[in-house]
Length: 535
Ligand code: GLN
Image (cartoon, rainbow, N blue to C red; front, top):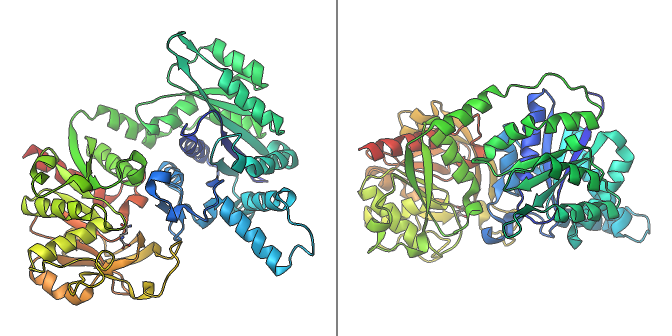
């Protein structure tokens, strides 16, 4: 294909319509037609990245291989397409302004007054095109965060207007809206969609394709009405009904020929419809699974999106084990010695979640103690692994004051300590140990058995580490350090071999599980949880 084509995914009416899932589905469909694609997210907030945001503000922070803390939608892009994203796939208003201001300080603008138009919009346009120019992708899909009409997204919309004008057929806008059903009137209402499209048109953008989110099936008449009022071809008005799983969205979009509409609009030949074989197999397997396994997530954020990638990884692993996974959130702030048995009673496996700070950690330690002493399959991730280590130090090694330096600066039993290179860092943003690092697995360990190789690479996001001064003592008592970074000697994995499944990873395996390539640790953890249930 000669020139890169650009797809802009925007949203209207309300937020949380699933622009990320639609973008990922479009990526999946074009990829399966043999196109070389990438998906990027532009977020209109001022933060440089979401790394410093509370999960309640923004959900999980997804980490790319090259160590960028990004929006959770990048997780969807990777899980759907299997294509790794990088720093360049994520941009915020904060970074756009920073780059413009840095250029201004350098004198690059030769005495000009710096304005939103053209300087900020030019910087947005430059960044939108960057990946396409560098890697010659066939399609670059750009999802714009927020909702049309937001003050902060205005410069992004202006940049898209200009790009559409400059690129002609090489750019399409897919606008996602909502069609509410009014129960009292018994009707589906298209007016919010009409208004949302008017808003786009008023800033000079004519959407090419509309995706209507709806809880009820839309008749042809409703679609015709939307087409007529919004100047959009009827076959470019697609509906996206609620489906049992987000992974059914690409199939649904293919059935409605969304990918063909894109190809037609961009002047690409429309070849045979891809079969999506393995993808369909995954969905069929998911549907066929009858039995379910209960997994308790011990964490402090009572919000679906806060542990998005962990939830998805568990669910992938469930499918490949022919089980449904019921994920039960267990608030660690509410877990006490007195109620832990009752709270964990119906769980076949427990995940101790990542996190930062003191709040809720005692509950995590109590949960780790209970699952270790009752031999319930347990997976500790990042802070979760650290809590397993602290629990072991307190209750097996006998150090009642064992803790992490993060929570207690003075404890002599700092079994989790601050990393050497983190000691002099005072800025919070983007300064952790981030991204993919090597890890060498110990032959003969459980994890070696699971990964079936010695060298792995996993992604990190932390400041604290297992304190190697205590390694011999831990190992003497049965908690083994079975994965280490070959350069820094940092402990990446601990396990207790005698138990059914008691493994903690300093890294985040959840960032690497995809639909067609589920993560081996999650697969094995779910397998053991199922066995535990059967018993
Ligand atoms: N707070 C811990 C650290 O910084 C764990 C971080 C995490 O769970 N992502 O080391």
